[in-house]
Structure formats: structure tokens, C-alpha cells
Length: 331
Image 1 (cartoon, rainbow, N blue to C red):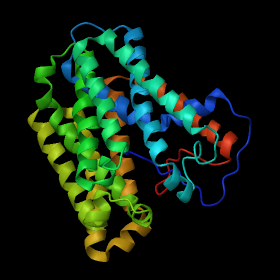
Image 2: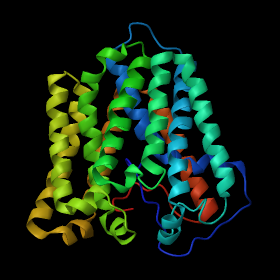
Image 3: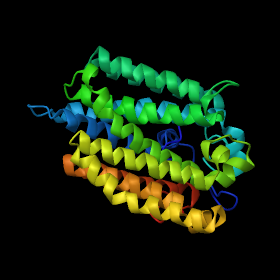
Image 4: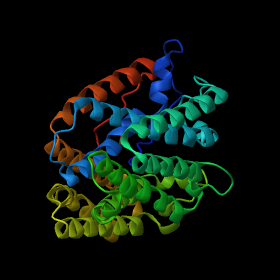
């Protein structure tokens, strides 16, 4: 699923350095997309406010389990998008044959099995939620009626998977009851929806050129950003109602970026909105705000993010001679 997705495009032919290694498989899972998943799960765990401290080994297992679970979602998506990725000169592992398609299938199945096996450690409810993510990943990417090709189903898959289910997984992990987590997860459904819509708006031109029917292609960039702004407003209102001050603070921090995007779009139109990179800046601001909220809740999270970011930058510089990921707006 494409939530929080950085296109990772290269402006020209990619230069590949080094021999095929296990690192290719690790970065094939798109680790740069894991922090947004971990962030929502952490905020879900914090919302339960477990009375007893959670052992560090359980946190590590949860992080690894979510990596395997969503890594499989992202590798499956790349398997079905290999031709469009090749045309757009991005996500090079399959288009450049660094990983063969058969090996990618085996790796994806292995990731799913590993994630479900690890999920058993946290109970049946957590396992059921993990199974739902596997199912949504298949529905989103696979087959002629893949949800990614339908704008409303694509939106639904992302807000349910990354908002409702991931938040609930964090809450269940921390000892919460699944039956009472749905209401507390609702503000995150809107928060994730706002980020997804902004990301889709940022990719309108490329998605339209490759025939993808995303929500932004269907609605247009300006209307999509209006919807994204509305989603963030609802996330703010619901978080205040639920006394979720971490999400409320994140929504307040990123809301001006969405408001500016809407203003630019209404006053100057889609071309100016895209030229300024306002939708992508809005998405990055929201992700950064949510991440900071999770760090405030669990300071140890920062120690996980910084090395991961630096190692990812080092790998992509070594492997492809490119700067990725970038914190610069529009990159």
C-alpha cells in the first residue's frame, strides 16, 4: 500500500554499484516506509496506558513482526508494479533484475509466514489483525481488480490498514481489548487518510501518465488537497474528543501546511500547487509531526529512527549513487 510513499524516482538512468547481497532483500522491503507503521502502532500502545512496563524484547519482536508484515505488502506491490516502476525509473530491485521475480515471490511468502508466526506471541487478536493486513495487501495489489486501480478502494485500504488496524495492533500488543480500540483508532483513520490524500496529490502527474486511477487522478489535485485538509481537521476534532493530546498536537502542527496547500490550489490552480511541491510538503509535515508525537510518548523510538535513516542513506548512496531518503521537500 502506498501510504506515506516516497516515489524514489531517479531523473536519469540508474547507476548500480556493488554485487548482489542480502542487503538488496532487506531494502527491497522498503524500510523507509516502516517508521510510519511503527509510529501508529506506538501511539496505539500508548493509548492503552499499560500499568506495567513492557519488556524491551517484546518491543523488538513487535518492530520486527511489523517489518515482516508490511515488508511483504510492499514487496508484493512491487511484483505487480514492476513494469510501471521500470517505465518511471524507480524502485530498482525488480526492474533492474537485482532480485528475480521468482525470488521476490518466495521472499514475500516467507515474510508473510514469519510475520504470522511472530504474531502468535501476542495472542489470537493480534494474529487476526495481522491476517487482515495480509488479506488487504493481496486485495490492494493482486489481480485484474486490484484495489490500487480503484481510487475509493485504494483510499479505503490505506486508512483501514494503516489507521484502524495498525493502531489496534499497538493497543492489543500493550494489553488492550480489541473490542474497545475501534473508537480510539478513529482519529488515526482520518489522520492517515489526510496523509494518503496528500501523497496521492503529489503523485498526480506521474500516476496519470502511467494510467493509474488514484483518488487524485479521479478528483484532481486541488480537490484532493481540500479532502486531505478536511481529514486532518476531523482527526484534530476527534483526537480532542478522545483526549488524545499526542495526535491533537500533531494535527495542529501540520494543519497549516495543508491550509497553505488548499489556498495555493484555490488561488493559483493545480500547476502552481505541484510546482511548489505543496502536497508532498504537507504529507512530510504530517508524518514528521506524528513521528515526534510517538517519540514524546516513547523516547527510545528516536534511537531506532536515526540509525535506520543513516543506514538507508548509506545503502542507496553506495548501491545507486543517489540521495535517498531525503528530508528536503519535493524530493
